Length: 230
Image (cartoon, rainbow, N blue to C red; front, side, top):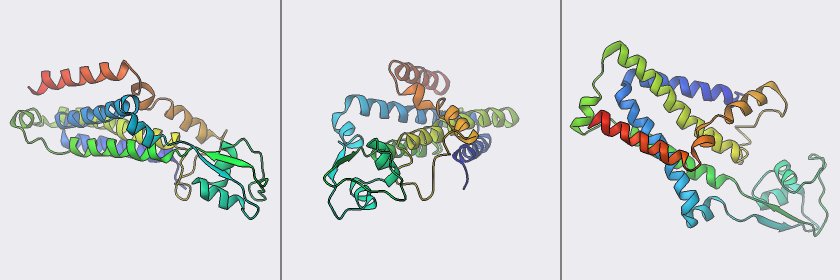
């Protein structure tokens, strides 16, 4: 199975290649769009109660019945057996799992935040990658051959870091929930797990999902747009 570390670097490299073809001026628009997406996520999670209630729903609670198996209970809680046991502090052999009848188990769903955040990021990125239609932006997007390609590659790699790094960060925060058949976290304590942990500690949401950093970042981003394109 391919590691998420490898997949992340592949996407960053792909974004850099796209940036080299498109040029730095167009890639700046993608950069601004990615920052704006993280800003929207921060504002929604911090100030919009309805959104926060949707992406962070209350924990599901289930009382074990005599005929229930661990798989049955995990399915009712919307998770896997290992995650169910971990969330409830139970040290039980997963393969020979047995639960006490009438015991109350709970689980906090984590996938909603991942899907909502990923949708916002990809939607803003999609619009950012559209060719500018405004004449002022078209003039600023004219390519300057080698220098433009090199700068485009640099900005493109930054876009890959912002977009795919943020998605991976939200996926990790969701515990790879509902993706166990295609994506699994690296074995705890392995070299790959250490590399992934170090990378995730440097992903954009770690720095940007915080005030006043995100506000300052957005202000400077739009000042740059005004100065360069207008």
